[in-house]
Length: 360
Image (cartoon, rainbow, N blue to C red; front, side, top):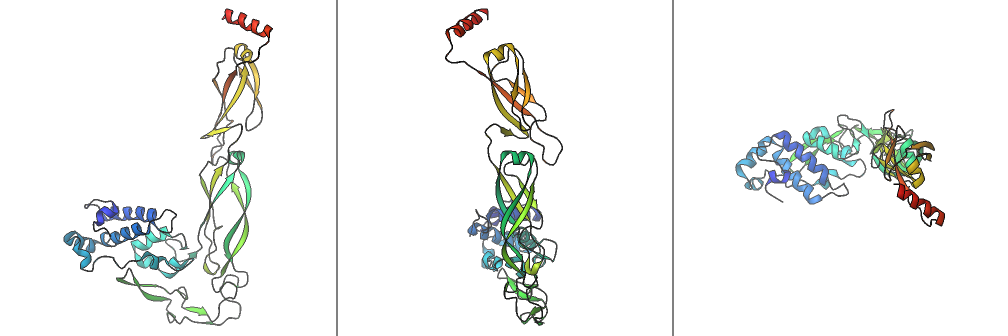
C-alpha cells in the first residue's frame, strides 16, 4: 500500500484533524466495497491512512519517522474490512458497538445502512432502495401506487421474539451473562463489544424459533401503498418511513427509499416545472389571426393567435405547467406555434397566393 498517508486521503500535511476526518468520510463512502462501484483495495488504503492520521499521537510519530512508522508497529496493517463487516444481515452493527470505536464507529455507522441507527442503542432493520417507473401524468399530478416487496418481516410464529412461548431463557454461555465480550479490532486494539450470541442481553433462549431460527424476522412478500407527490422529477427520491426491513427480533424497521424514472409523453415535454408543447397553424391563421384550441394537461383551452404571428412564436399559458413539489404553485405551459406551409395547392389557390405575395 502507499506510504504517503496524506496523499492517500488527499489532504495537506498541515490539515486539521477535522479536515482529515472529513476527507476520510468522503473517500470511505465513495470506495466502500459494499457499494456497486466500490474498490476494496482503495478502501483498505484509506483505512490504513486514517488509522494513523486520525490519531494525534500516531500522526505525530508518522510525521517524525515517515515510512519507517509501519516497521515500528504503528501502522494499521492488520486491518481487514471484511472481518470488520462480516456477519451477514445486520452482522456489522449487531456484533460491534459503534460507540466503543469513537470516530470510526460514527463513520462506519454511516456507511452500513443496517443494524442500529447512529446515536441510539436500538437495533433497526436495513433500508430498502428501489427504482420505480411512472407515467408522465403521474409525475405531474401525483398518484397512489401499490408495490410488492420481498422484505424482512416480523416472524408470525414467535411474534418477533426469536423463540416460541414456553422456551426456557438461560444465561448466555459466550459472555457469561455480561452481554459484552472483548474483541481485537484492526489487529491492534482491544475493545469491548456487544456479545454476538445474546446481542447484549446477557441471556438467550434455550432453543430458537424453528421458523426464523432466533432472528425474529423472516423474508416475506408484502404489499405497500405509497403516495407519489405531485411534481416529482426524474431521479428524485422519496422516503417511506418504517417500510424497510424489520430489525432483529421484531425491532424497528428501516426505511424504504424510492427513486423515480418518468416515461416520456407524446404531446408534452417537461422543463423544470414548465410544460413545453407545439401546435400547428396555417398561413391564413398566421396572417389574419384566429382563436385555436390547444391541448394542456388540464384539457383543451382556447389560444388567441394575433395577426402576423411568425412560425416559432411561443405563447405562455399561465399556471398550466407542473405543480411545484410540496407547494401550491404551478409552472406555466409554453406553446410554440409552427406555421404550416401548404402543399399541393390548386390552381386557384396558387393564384390567390401570388396575389397575396404581390400585396406583401
